[in-house]
Length: 268
Image 1: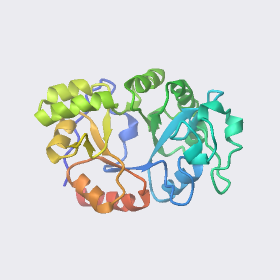
Image 2: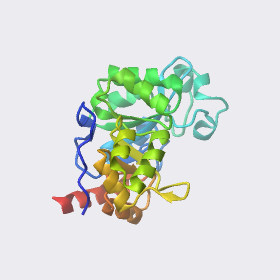
Image 3: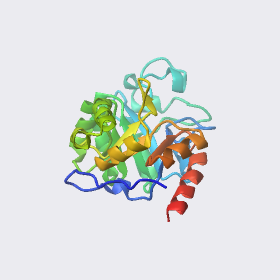
């Protein structure tokens, strides 16, 4: 039903992050149907729905604490003027995000869910060190994947955690890798993606499809997993999994977990 994933080419071997069975469901900002996104509440809902993997984002507070929040400003998520970086942790935790839910720190989240794996998007340069500190303090290196739109931010965080931590490609790496994959030049795909373990991508970039069965096979041959975001329709997710995609990043973990279980049962 699906292509086998090639062994990755980093000398450190496959990180423990990838130890659970395929396909993976990554709960995008948790499961925020009736609770605020990127909070202990939404993460708890995702875990209740069966999610093993959670995608989250981090920005730094004024006092250098990694906060699980997507936006650098507070208007959309909290209805408050200003930025995350403009408030201390104590000040942020006075803000009600809805229903009494407050901002969470990355350290709190990792400590609260010690069996869950987290996909962490580094949203700003100033959060790289605080995020790494939270991961180290909670002993979570083996159960996190570091990603960022910026290669510089991702590498800065990975350097603090050590090469054994899982990482996914940034935009500046994936675009040339996609071109080489489309052309069938797998050695160059492998070279471009030599420092990462996964690519996490939309279905199309600049109108060019990123997810065909052939492209997925070539990315696998280069030693990386393929995760696609943000997919909330079950039939669309099924189509992607049938093409060999390894992971679905979704706002609807409650719908995707049963689908993933169906694929696992069919493969066993």
